Image (cartoon, rainbow, N blue to C red; front, side, top):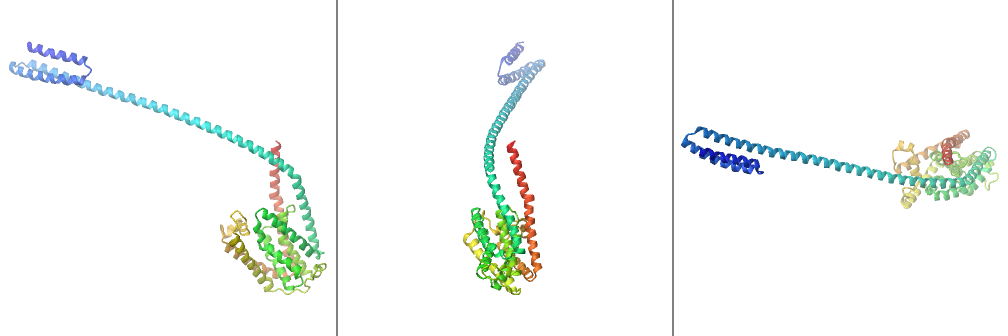
Length: 420
């Protein structure tokens, strides 16, 4: 009985301690050690008393203590998992909150950027409207003067065309005088305007050099048949071809376009009068043009023009490409011709300068060979004149019905928008 009481006391005290203690694991370990001691003492006492019931009781107590220990361990694991889940939930909520704050900040910044852009755009529109109003007022003030100038140029161009038609058909004596007066005037005007527009390198082309050579011949050697034959070949060869290369057109209100057409066509009309009507052309001139011109020859009609062109090309290349070396934005005849779409299709992008020179020389030989036919046959020469007249007239019609009409319609639309 004493042994049973002694066993019941530690059992009850251990259960009370397990119920009241907050340090479950530590107390379980202490009671486990006490129970092991008690179990050993029980076994020893049982060996003395051989009481099987007492031994079974101690085993039940030991098993109960192990179950309680395992339960408390599982409870601590469950508590830790709940803590993890709670922390995870808190982190997710914090992440969502931060995400919403960032999203709201981005939206606010976008709205601020849009507002600033809208303000700058409105300010730019106001400036553009002010500038357009000023430009419209200036154009409105300039229109009467500009229209008057274009009317004057148009009238002079048409009257000049009538005068040249009369000179070619009946009054051939007008041709040298007309050329001698108008050629230096227009070329000087062209040099001034092209220099202001940074097109001055065009004035070094063979077209101007050829007109200078023709002027020297009619002034200082009008009766020389060889030089008159050379004048015919240059006028109906290289200058004739230049009208097609630079797309000359009869735009009667444009001084620039009429000047370009003049440079390439009027020498041809002068050569027509000198070749087929030498006596009428010389009537009021200071010298007589040869009434018995030389026969067509390869030397004066083909090779000599080619030699003059080659000499001009060498001097031009030395002066422009070696000495002066114009900047990229400056337009020259080489850059102008090679920038055309038709030239790019044939020779590709940016053909070399040597190719440009070689093509010019080949075309010079071809067109100079054609001048042999023009020089020998009157109607062939008339046909060549008609082809050139058709070409420049067709280009002028294209300008008036395409380019000019579109620009005027655009101008009317802008004016209507201003009025509205």
